[in-house]
Image 1 (cartoon, rainbow, N blue to C red):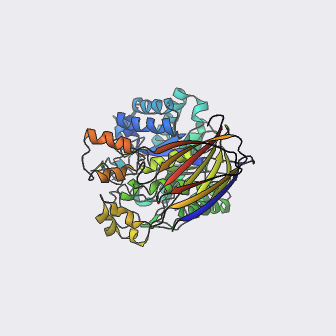
Image 2 (cartoon, helix red, strand yellow):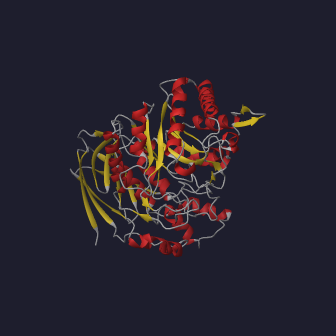
Image 3 (cartoon, rainbow, N blue to C red):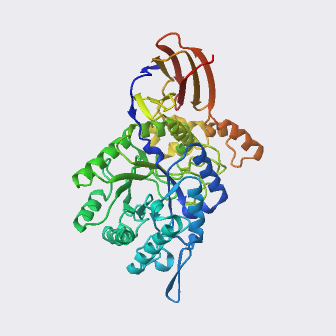
Length: 512
């Protein structure tokens, strides 16, 4: 039985402004990966079709960037690689959302590291030298790109320090010293530069409560510390997988993101920090780099629905990440291994990519919205109607053995709600003359590259000729109709499959 939603639209009425916070920031792996030509091509693809404003990556001060070393006890700085990275980003219209970490080996107080690439996660052995490094870095980027430009950047102190693998012993007081010294060092250069934190991970915490959120804000208030934005990572899961992507993980309900964002707003208000910008600098359907559902068609409506529902509660929600060229737990062993990326290692657009593409095609004004649709108008007058059919996880998804057995097969879709296709009935009034309707459709048969790969037998190695086929299959279906709008309202129907998203762009035309 079809689910039927009715959408009645007065195309001439005034709308409300749309703030597309989902396009403000996106994540990447580590900065060193941004030196690679293939990663750069993936980022350029994203920026060409659905540009983001900022990019955030780990490992700015890691050894492969070669920024800091000591010889005979004296520090030596080398900015050449970071210049190559930032020059490229700015040339394609994306700015750094600078994550300050991890610790340069020669400045580290210990040997604890994280990830395959061994980022050092210990405090500095010399706090004054850490402050010097921060100031030298900030002065360098100001000299190279100009103060007005760098004032538009964000400087985030560390990554997920509440999680012991990312900060030695998850030592809150040590982190606060790091934050205080770093923030003050930056502000000494220019008070208008934007600094914030604590960039904590929330995936295993209490819904609506950012780990270290209250404590961090209280410490900032007590010590009168500079803070321009609040950041945390609202992954919608409990008991996160380990850093290799293994282990038991459970998903929360479909409204988890909204629960988190409204809870964070309450925390900020109670601490007297409602005025802060709210940047949630990592987010996806889970924090696992080997979650096979990341590759499924589920991700497209997941991204659309969650971002739409979160409007007004965040200044950015940064999807983690651009590309499956991502080496925290080494490169994935197969083309579709459950990686975080919007595109896979071979540059194939995944369903998550299409989710953001659809959001990027919305207009500047909101005319109407509901549980599964949004109606917007562009400055050009085009009406864009976005519809989706979201199917959440079921209880079976919380059994990791079930998912492991389903990897590489269509059984992956068995862990989601089994919903029927959704019928939308649209009634549009206020149109004059002839109408052009462009329909762009995504579902498992149109644009889901994972499903196309499964049709090929899920090969571990994609031959070049098969890659060409998958490049065709990864694209969305687009059709165009022209008809007379003599009847008012104009009535149309549209069917959206489970895990599907459909966009209608409606414009008046002098031609039939």
